[in-house]
Amino acid sequence: MSSFKPNVEECLALQELPSYEFISSLVKNVCTVLANEPEKYRPANCVGQQGSLLKLYEEDKRCLPVVIIPDIHARPDFIKNILACTLPKLKLTVMQALEQKKIDLVCVGDAVHTELFSLRWKLISAEFEQGIHTGHYMQDEMIATLSTLCAIMSLKILFPENFHFLKGNHENILNSNLGGDYAFYKYADEGEMVKRFIQEYYDEKLLNLIAQYENLLPLVAYGKNYVVSHAEPADTFTAEQLIDARFEEGVVEGLIWTRNGQVKKQTVVPIMNELLGKKSAKKALYFSGHRPVKENYALRQDGRLVQIHNPHKQNIVLVEPDHNFDFEKDIINTKGAKKNA
Image (tube, rainbow, N blue to C red; front, side):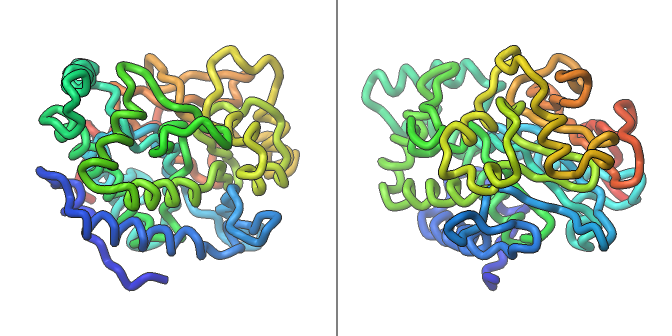
């Protein structure tokens, strides 16, 4: 395990772009952590490397509560509020619970590309039309993006067995159309703009290093009574397919890009049956982000899939291993939650 000890608070407080040396060292260290995750919770794939499935419980051991984080999208303030939020049943903040190894924390993915500042993307587009790829508005966007990304990497280094970040469709720094990824365009040509910025402000080597980090991220996590992926699963993937996902682009695409209404059959129950066993799966829920919801959550697939990404809120989800999920109490607003235990 790396001896590199980053400072999460410093990452979240960035007011200017991080130095090349800082971000390069951080990415190298988190890649080392991800490339050496133990098989006890990250089963090896068909070539003996870390697979794409996280198993966060063992049948003969106590299962930890899990905090599930929806899409973050370059919101360092969201991460600050998450870490400071007190979990009522534990009477600890999320940060304290991580430090004491009393929770697992799973992020559904999408660290980058702000969703709440569409006007900024229009201003960035105007900069790019003038051939300015590292201009004022793009630097503002990248400070938020890199602050978020550095904090996430730091948390993984500090709490490797308890903090986990899944790959989303925005984890595509190369803006690639390969391996289940697709180039990203929403308010503007965000995917290409971020790629161009990294190339010009930093260099191609750092761009490829971040891509290496993204390729080491898992795609699915599960515990005693839950399964998590970025998007609604497009098909009834087996455990073997989930572990070996990076060798089958349809699996990657089917876990990070699924649209509402795209899935015409029940997929989450078969996956939960496969991973948890039919008895445990009866009390389990499948959680995802990706598609925005209007309230605290939206239900699909006969209520077994819970979508939790509301970009206008800062909610987290707490799932306890031996309790039925309470949709009113276990979805916690980190903006309004108590901040000190």
